[in-house]
Image 1 (cartoon, rainbow, N blue to C red):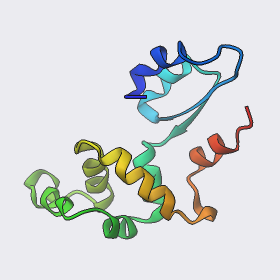
Image 2 (image 1 turned 90 degrees about the horizontal axis):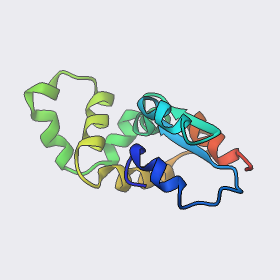
Image 3 (image 1 turned 90 degrees about the vertical axis):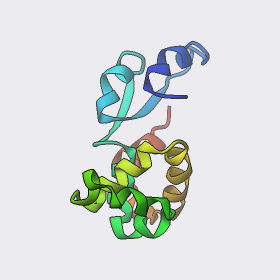
Image 4 (image 1 turned 180 degrees about the vertical axis):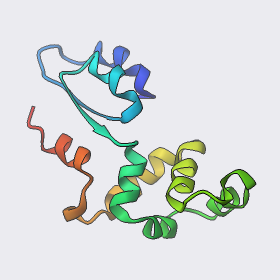
Length: 124
């Protein structure tokens, strides 16, 4: 969809006769609620939900070597691993899409993050 603010444009391309639901990051919730009846919110964001579900150590095994470069930067060095991973996933072009797919494929189906499970179970 190319970002939360694209929801307004996106909604003009879908059938108004159908009910639509959304999955968004916590800071995007007000934007989504203006356009959708049902919104499932990831706290703080989808990356954080997936890191929590998989565990930071497992995610660390899955990211590429460029992550080590971020960890060496003074500003990130003393931050918790989870925060470093979220920064890496959000900061490099293409990382969100690339890793979200890998992380979802690696999920134990008994540990799917709640917002993701709820949006998938919504039968609208």
